[in-house]
Amino acid sequence: MKITKVETLCLSRPHEPEHRWFTSNFRTTKADCAIVVIHTDDGLQGIGEGCAYGDPPQIREKVEWLSHELVGRSPLDPAVAPHPNGHSRAYDAAVSGLDAALWDIRGKAEGKPVSELLVDRPLERVRLYASSGCRYDWGERPEQLIDEALEYIEDGFTAYKFRLGSEWTWDDVTVGRFIALLEKLVEAVDGRMDLILEGNQRFTESDALEIAQAIDRMGFFWFEEPIPAAQIDGYARLNAAVELPISGGEALTTGEQFVPYLEQKAYSIVQADAGLCGITEGLRIGRAAHHMGAVLIPHNWHNGLMTMANAHLVAALPNPRILELCMIQGPLQWDILKEKPVIRDSFLELPDRPGLGVDLADDLEQRFPYIEGSYGVTVEK
Image (cartoon, rainbow, N blue to C red; front, top):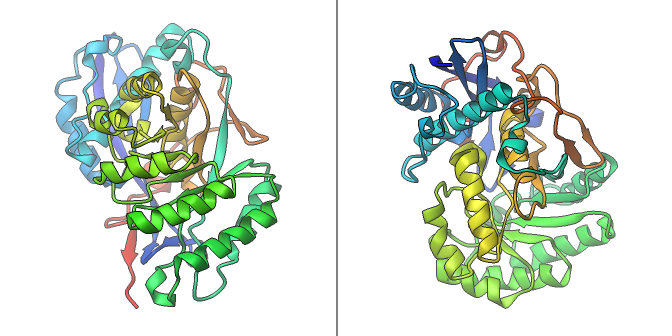
């Protein structure tokens, strides 16, 4: 079997005004997707999604450049897969789409799900957490955060991650006011849901410590990226100061990049994303983290094909926990697939089919033509 062609589908769908999500001073306008398709001479086709933060046209350019090393070679040869370099997001997203597509072909060739190629006895289903908290405005009704949590409980989710709401300086929001809102959230949830706070690297170390101590007392699941990622010593101090796990690393794409964080115990949870590091490197990072006393819980934003790659990765980890599911991507998320996988009682059930277990829907480029430009805008007040 030989690779004959590699292509990238660049897709978009505009958000209706009422469905545009926001955090801090950033407002979204559309959803994007970059899908890599590998064709072979015996008819097998592999599909994978690269993280669209890299900008789909840029991902396509990198895939085209990398494809010159792939065409004519066997997709079953592990050496054919390119590796992330940790320097270019678009390059690493392209590598990740290719890596997932190659695993998809290998699974189809062997008649096995990707997770069974990665490990002998993978999980058959993966727990999901609802990821959003990107629609509450401190100047209007911040309690929308609580409404959203209760909606996800009704939908069957048992864990929820949320962000910090609109830009705090616009409405003189303080750490104390934020903690008071979290106390109301915890009271409303009443033990029915694990809570996760995403800091988006927006806090100083002192403010992060105050919040970490507060949500530690409240029993939160973990605290994600509270301070700028480069402050490894600060992460190590925070992680040592509370029982609550501190997480980070969603933008890191190689095992080597995680080494100083793991050596200094800066992260209890690493968040490498198969849409940016690939399944191959993701498993390597997960095993290294496990060896050093941490756990991999992947970052997983955007669309359903990337969710499937991350789900197969989680199912094969030495200490599998849970996977992020974006709740605000809109119809593009699952409409790129012919069939949405079964999600029941907060678990994604891995399809009993070879490869990633899903197929692309028809006429995607006609249904979701790419919209040029950024997927969001910065708002100033």
